[in-house]
Length: 83
Image 1: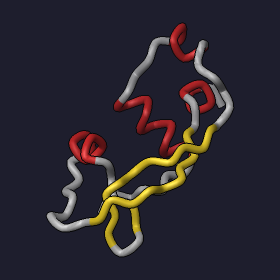
Image 2 (image 1 turned 120 degrees about the vertical axis):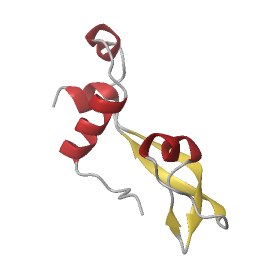
Image 3 (image 1 turned 90 degrees about the vertical axis):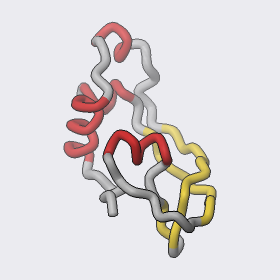
């Protein structure tokens, strides 16, 4: 299963590798983290990667799962690139 919990350094590297942005775009993004609710595939009360993230990471989502709402903390690009 994909490790869904990255430390900040691992998360920084993931976004640098997978979603490179130009500095000008990064500078206009809000630097404050935000909480969002998102429906994710879930199994045994554990969130699985979204179908979009599974395509990027190569993670397989099981054939049977439930959709569950998860409260996630979203770190803005600026805080990931410039900490």
